[in-house]
Length: 153
Image 1 (cartoon, rainbow, N blue to C red):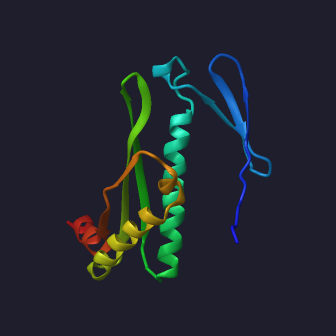
Image 2 (image 1 turned 135 degrees about the horizontal axis):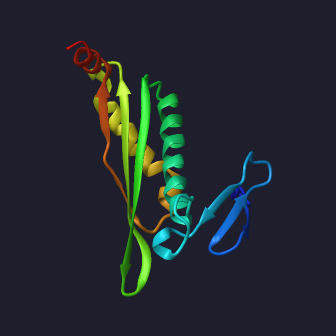
């Protein structure tokens, strides 16, 4: 039996290339614009940011869930994500989205396990699996012991 979930949003124009997106039961609305390179207002969220943020937030949630189920003890988890928009043959598309997760763990023992769980999270992330562009993972692991020794020097 197929299981389905539905996620609805409402968007409306707010003049020019600006708008607002909201979802019932979600705390706040988000103002957005086209990117400045497409004649939008600088300093606002854009649909392009939303796409990269959707992947980043999905990856964070997926990794956190996998780490919890695997009983992985980590001190911190940070992720930088960048989307590369490309114009080929007059058509704009995301060519690639790069994920740069950094997991800080207490000691060296779990380094390989962390890398495996990060790779599993990339394969399990439903947003990543739904995209046509390539998702590239650049995992990094920091060791708390090394950080504290460096801080003392």
